[in-house]
Structures are given as C-alpha cells and as structure tokens.
Image 1 (cartoon, rainbow, N blue to C red):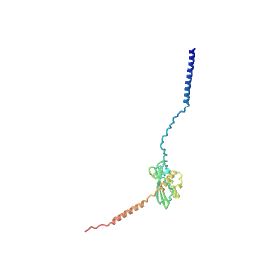
Image 2 (cartoon, rainbow, N blue to C red):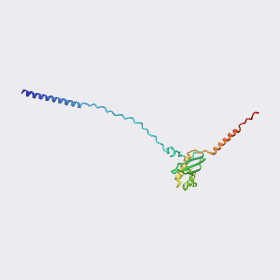
Image 3 (cartoon, rainbow, N blue to C red):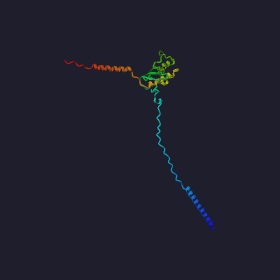
Length: 215
C-alpha cells in the first residue's frame, strides 16, 4: 500500500514539474515574441550622378542664314533704294535640268535704268534659237521680265510670267543676289587709271637728267 501511495505521489510531483516546465517555456516564448524587434536600417543606394544633359544648339536653316542649297547668298535687297550707282550682277540656282540665269542690273541716280538677263543650259550655252532652244514662253519672259523690273523698281512686284514660272523664279533670285552685292568696278576707269599711272612713270623717267661725259 505504501509503495502504491508513494508511486502515485511521485507521479503527481512529476506532472507538476512538467507543468511548471511547460509554463516556463511558454512564458519565455511569450516574452520573446513581445520583445521589440530591432529593425536594421535600410540603406537606399544613392543615385549615380548622371552626365550633364546638354541641349544641342539648333542648326540654322537656309532662311535664317540667308544661304541657299549651294551656299550662295540669296539676298534680301529687292530695290535700288540706298544703293550706289553702278552695275550689279547676280546668278540663280540651277534647276533640275542644270539650267540657270544670270542678270546684270545698272543703277544710275538711285534708279534701275537697264537690266540684262540671260539663261544658260547645263553645258553653259545661252538659251537662244541659234543654240537650238525653242521654248517660246521662256524666251518671251527673257525680254519681258527685265522690262517689269525697270518699271516697278522692285523685284517683289514682278508678276509670274504665264507659262514660264520657272524662269520668273530664277530671274527673281538672280536679281535679289545682284542687288544684295556690290557694284562691279568699271574696267574702263581702271584701264584709264593704269594707263595714266604708266604715263606718269614714263614722264618721270624722261625727266631724269642725264650726266654729260667729262672731258
């Protein structure tokens, strides 16, 4: 009887110990779960410095620079106002067939007094009947457009010649370039100046006294 009672008592003691151990473990788990967690600071990578963004400078167009597709000055002067007297020459662009126009404008007393216009083929021959050119409308425009410029005294007031709009456009371009340039020097005056200079030099040489031989 004593052994049975002792065994029963020991079993109860073991149960109590196990219960205490379980309770202790649960308390530790609860404390651990309730304790504040130390969060590691998140390091955000700093953005790498980007190369400086440079805005490319706009490329000037032909209209802004006053240049055409061939690099020649298109010119903005359309009248003789403010220009000195003289002879002004200009040339148009080549068309799709290689033809182009050349103009010679004479200004006297601040007015356009004479205009000569000639168109050439791609091989540099003037467009005339003698050279086999037979487009009547264009040849009529060669004569009428200079008359219009003398009458209007302004390139922008020249009307498109019916049936020869291409010729009209070349005429306008050549005339603007001519008026935007400088007058050609008078070759006759240059020749006269050169000749007078040569004459004065010869006179100076002739005036040089000659030494008579000593006897």
